[in-house]
Image 1: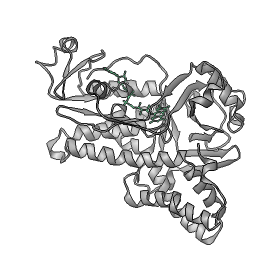
Image 2 (image 1 turned 120 degrees about the vertical axis):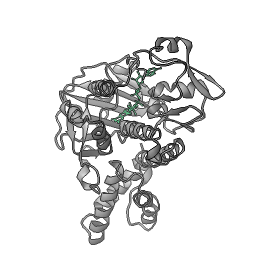
Image 3 (image 1 turned 60 degrees about the vertical axis):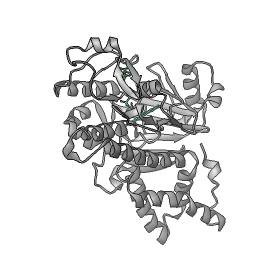
Amino acid sequence: MFSDVRTTDLFVGESLIPAIIPVLRELGIEEKVKAFSVYKPGATVWVHPDLMAEASFAGGMNTLPTYAYNTNRRHFDALLLQTAREAGVPIVEMRAGIQVQNGKVALSDETLSACRAYFNGQPDFFIDASGRKRIFSNAMKLPERKGERMDTALFAHVKELEFSANYGDIHMHLATRGWCWRIPLPDRTSVGIVINRETLANYGTSSEEQFDRYIQEDPKISPFFKNVERISAVQKYSNYQLQSQRITGKNWALVGDAAGFLDPVFSSGLYFSMKYASELAATFDSSSGSTLRSYEKRWHREIASWRKMIEIWYNGRLFTNFKMGNDRLSTFLGKRIGKHAIRHFTAIFTGEAVLNRYSMWLLRFMTGPLLNFMYFFRMHRYKVKDLEL
Ligand SMILES: Cc1cc2nc3c(=O)[nH]c(=O)nc-3n(C[C@H](O)[C@H](O)[C@H](O)COP(=O)(O)OP(=O)(O)OC[C@H]3O[C@@H](n4cnc5c(N)ncnc54)[C@H](O)[C@@H]3O)c2cc1C
């Protein structure tokens, strides 16, 4: 395994979802992760400063642990590397270089000579886990699918913020033109804003100025950032919605962000990377019944579900559904339907039911045709467009 050093200590991917816990257990590292993380029992979404939607992970179908962690990413990555080392994986600490011929990957001469101790000639199979560097996709010019959003995310650490409710949850806030997150970490709070770059340009020229001004000046989020003190530089991410159309080939496979990344909103990145790393590993075990083909098929199917969820977050349908449902929670029908829907929606967002056909159908139906029908017959008065991000 080749491991290049990160150029920054500050890296996104701090909030985990329950579906990652089985992978941490499989690796035997959950207790170690817990030691440098904050226990995360759910997610809290602030539609505006005095209307919040709480989703406890215990409200799903309970086939998964009902919690996750908010973690220190630097410690998390170091732990994964150490775990690999202890399992006997030889780790070459350098940036791997590759060459491609006739759709087959090979190590560059320089990289090959740096690891002569491990290989007699070229390795048989290659996995690209290089994250957004996407080294195989770039070298092979693999067809890719870009997402519709062209947002910029600015992210930094600030001195511990006060949480008026639900400490431990990730808190997501709808801003005037985008959204922001607050993630409680052991001795600090992670804050990120996700917004289109034209809006951001009105808040200054440097990332630091834009970040500091936006969280103080947007009236929908500023109440949550009183006396905020930034303690890190600001990292900027843009154009991150990118997915490869092919993730396996003659002697190679892609995993993690190198295969594709959709959006930060549901904290699915690390879960998705680690779950499919585990599935990819299973394809090398002939008794597992898994093949590269089935790996690729499952990956595409699951990413399509996450894409749908992300779409309804940005197009306003999820919040419209929440507001409409909230008005009806005290009625006989509203209580029953609401309970059923919340159970399925929670299970989807924890990763538990993301491949469950009925749950996904219900989400599509309730945020699509049902909303339209009820609006048409004046059974609710919310315009989806008003809650679009
Ligand atoms: C704004 C934003 C917020 C996010 N928030 C969350 C969140 O809260 N929760 C979550 O789960 N996910 C989140 N994500 C997604 C998450 O960061 C990624 O999905 C996750 O880091 C992917 O892991 P990875 O291992 O594929 O890639 P990376 O974490 O990028 O790791 C790739 C590694 O490969 C190394 N490397 C690169 N090239 C080479 C080479 N040639 N040779 C050797 N090594 C190399 C790099 O140094 C790096 O260590 C967020 C993403 C964004 C953009």
